[in-house]
Length: 62
Ligand code: F3S
Image 1 (cartoon, rainbow, N blue to C red):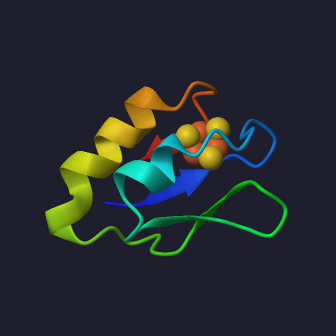
Image 2: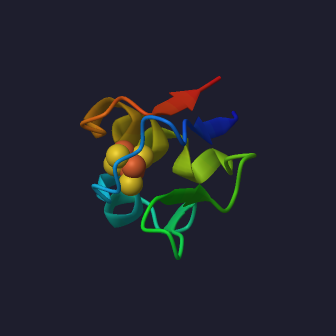
């Protein structure tokens, strides 16, 4: 599974990083950075949850 964050939509709410710091981080600019675009299988469920909970709908999984 792959995950991306749309930089144009992210507003730095940080839900993603709180849920799964193994995959998401907050960059120096205050917006999300995907540290692990190829999501390890053990984090797939939590990354899907993060995508569903991002207030800006900025996270896409494929
Ligand atoms: Fe950005 Fe959504 Fe995460 S707004 S910081 S991708 S929860």
